[in-house]
Amino acid sequence: MTTIFPEVPSKPLPTIEQMLTELVAVNSISSTESSLDRSNAGVIDLLAGWLRAAGAEVTVHEVISTPRKLNLIARIGQGDGGLVFSGHTDTVPYDGQRWATDPFVLTEQSGRLHGLGATDMKGFIAVAVTVLARHRHHPLKKPLWLVATCDEESTMSGARWLQETGLLKADYVVIGEPTDLVPVRAHKGHLAHRLCAHGHSGHSSDPAAGRNAIDGVHAAMSELMAWRKQLQQDHRDDSFAVPYPTLNFGRIAGGDAVNRICPDAELDFDLRPLPDMALPALYTALHQQIRSAQEHSAATLELQELWPGTPAFSTPASATLVSTAQELTGSAAVCVNYGTEAPYFRALGAEVIVLGPGRIDRAHQPNEYVTRDELARCEVLLNEMVQRLCL
Image (cartoon, rainbow, N blue to C red; front, top):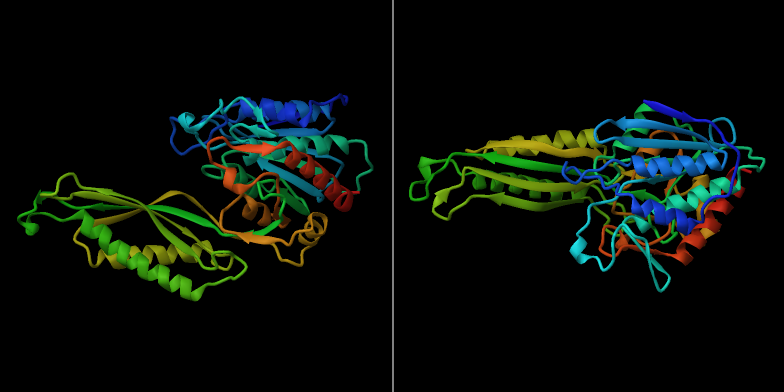
């Protein structure tokens, strides 16, 4: 379902800080746990209102019906191409006991604006709205877009929807994740899986009386560790701080008594591939490792994908957007180990960078914050990018 908002006469917008206050007040947590998952409609409604007031063309698209998850696409100027500022509207869950302030009340302390999503990434969205509004009456040669997505923190459903529909046809995309305003031109991908081992219980005094699921997990871990070593030998990119693919065992569970053969066990693990590692080939190889482990296990091994994998992304260092961002920021573009929505925009043919206010080490943390100075510097930078790429 798509909702189209017509243009309305321009009127003054709230300040960036006022917008951020309202955005933070909306609970837009996304999670694969249904008890925590919330709609992002409240955030989209705020953005649609502000952008319409600024005279932008606004469309809102339903990506998921329950709970209602929405994408927003706004544009000033005409035609395809141009520059996109993109941000996700959801946040991660939080532990209120570890917060010194109310996560949903933007609270200023010594120039720091604390609130859930302040740096990841509602602050950037507020800045982008302001910049788009400022250029409403300028003679743009290329359109300026603002895209707001859902579920980046969980399933990437908003970005996947953009890729699948192909509605957005832009030349350049800036994704405003917190990078301390240092351009990021590449990052690793992410695959997350659960291995379930199913055996049969019995008394530990007689191993033949059962099938030990923990032994099955051990067989799988041995195969995966050997595969991890091979991947790291075959793939390396020194542009990254961790220059090889990583495979991490994040959770293991099973068994209930020391004298009982374990009937069921689970292993959760993730893989972060480099840009030269295609997801289809990785999935094929991963399933081969589990089939090989099954040959050495009496327990039955079942591989489950926790959520759809995200590919790695890379924009060439020679790309126009990368060189423009480097010149305007005075910082060389870097490659990072975490993931974003960038590969889905890249798949649409755009040059893409990740660039936004705040620092990534504040994201997903108690007392998350962005500073007024960071927001101000981001506003200047985005205005300069519009001057270079749209005017």
